[in-house]
Length: 400
Ligand SMILES: Cc1cc2nc3c(=O)[nH]c(=O)nc-3n(C[C@H](O)[C@H](O)[C@H](O)COP(=O)(O)OP(=O)(O)OC[C@H]3O[C@@H](n4cnc5c(N)ncnc54)[C@H](O)[C@@H]3O)c2cc1C
Image 1 (tube, rainbow, N blue to C red):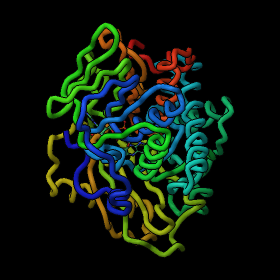
Image 2 (tube, helix red, strand yellow):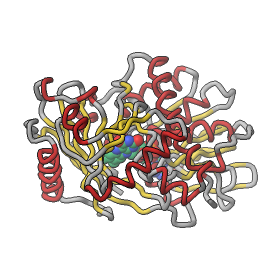
Image 3 (cartoon, rainbow, N blue to C red):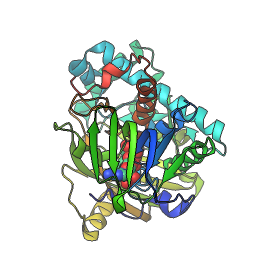
């Protein structure tokens, strides 16, 4: 599967920030982690001081899966509104899922501070506006429910929106807790710190087959090399679906652009993350203080190869949609790309174990909030591998 196509901004900007060797000998370790994106990097980092021997294997270059393509909004609001999520999983579980994503934003902030420099991390409020007047009532209900459960939100009327953002909408939720980060740089920083603790990361090392045995797994890599591990973590992003017997997600395509630098007089209130209630939703934010990122216009399918002409058309659509909302900001696309992403029935990720795959833990940060879910996954998997009970695990279990 092509996880992205064309030119993700952060990959172009950051380039090759670290190199890791490919596997050239057989290994016997405690924990093997398949994948070296943000999910694997966070899981590996959490396990770095566990006393276990851990190694990370990626068939590509670390960070060059979906992580390189991510627009990296850090939001506790998942793609399923809290009001809807309550219907899927009950109010208690729905609120807890939102709370865990909010905590994940603060956890990323702490990690970035610890690993200095801070990898483009900034706290940013998030503003969700009603795409149509008919969405007003549902959005207001969403606001009231979040307020009732202690989320730091304000309701914005059309006049507030016009004054603070310069665009028109019938209402919006202004949410204090949110953030942004350079997910690609953060992934490498986590992996480098993991290496400093005596562990190894392998690039260009595809795991071609997994044998599930009585006391662990044997991974078959390239050139006939074998890795024997007591435990396996699968953090292969959307490519993990091939290891799961049941269907748990659909793969969509999504599109994003980053503009040429613009004058800072055009940026808006506290450089808030902005998104809307329509599905699929348009979203935009300020990048590096002077560029605008716009994303969305998803297709409900994913082609093995997305033609450049289709990405060009989507770039034009995103530009037009942004200009319709913000006609006073001149936007010229500089980088554009497409990426795969997985959608689950309730918007929540799948984390943990399945009976058919012994000794194996899945860290699957699916959905629009993949990165905050990766933080939650790393915490749960760390505890599971260490044999500790994690009470949040049941929220994201496979048989929910
Ligand atoms: C355009 C776009 C915008 C997005 N925007 C946001 C956003 O604003 N906020 C947000 O939170 N999330 C967003 N996401 C989602 C987020 O980027 C993903 O959830 C996250 O990057 C997934 O990380 P991962 O580590 O699970 O997967 P990946 O980064 O894909 O890493 C998995 C790795 O596994 C490796 N692998 C696969 N199979 C094997 C194998 N057999 N052997 C060895 N290695 C293997 C791959 O090479 C890959 O490097 C966005 C995604 C896209 C595409």
